[in-house]
Length: 105
Image (cartoon, rainbow, N blue to C red; front, side, top):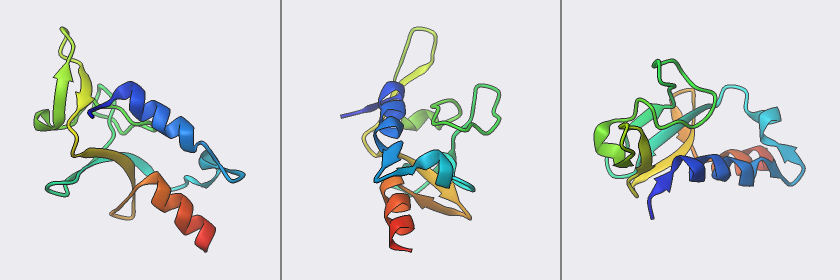
């Protein structure tokens, strides 16, 4: 199944509250990013102007990562091998990894 922008936003909402931890309270230093599981390339999330974004947006991702666009050329879905996560200190993390590491520390 392909990831849509709506699914990426919904994915954030699912993890927003996790065992009493609010993600926004622990997110210092974590930047929204996407990772290609096939070649391990990572791209930080950007807005339409190319500035870093505080949320997962499809703008600025490589064309080959995009599965579907609307009639205006805006990315609607990403390919299966693309996952949403976060970058910190040059390391990519899924939200689940962030939550588990924080709880384990």
